[in-house]
Image 1: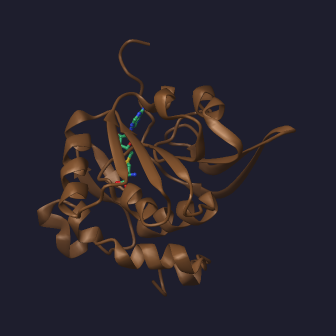
Image 2 (image 1 turned 90 degrees about the horizontal axis):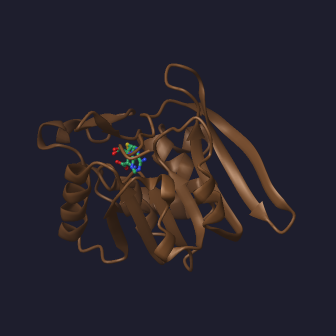
Length: 202
Ligand code: SAH
């Protein structure tokens, strides 16, 4: 908490509490449990990773959530980021393109008794239209540009947090705010995320 999060500028007490509450060791493969709290990402199978704790905390903090919010996540992965959000908001809807990961995350979250996190197997490029609009949207894989359907599914006053950039080049954590005047984009820190993949039928 102190070295990985607070010293790097994560100060929101609710975020730090949520990070303390969610048992990260339950979201990593059995042989990596001893490394669950390392200061880096870890493999979760299918070529994917669970994000570094600091990145999860940073994204959660800049997402600026409140307890009434309905949040969409693209890239369920292990389900860890969804679980952290589930501590802080009303409902989390999370989309994962790899069926095996989605099923495993669902089982992990069920095992922890989480009932406000809903997982769907799909290409998250299209968001989750039936449940839109969302107060907040978080994307945990990096596309080269912001998927337009996600901006459309943001509620007015809503915020989208998404890593943007090509693989092998600097990606930037990007904030998209939707206001009555339009859409404003800013960025926070350089990051390194797995690619945002697309379903075959493109
Ligand atoms: N948030 C995760 C880390 C995700 S790693 C955690 O806390 O563990 C990124 C995930 O995004 C991977 O599981 C990958 O399969 C998924 N992904 C990549 N492209 C996607 C897309 N178009 N739609 C949905 N999920 C996608």
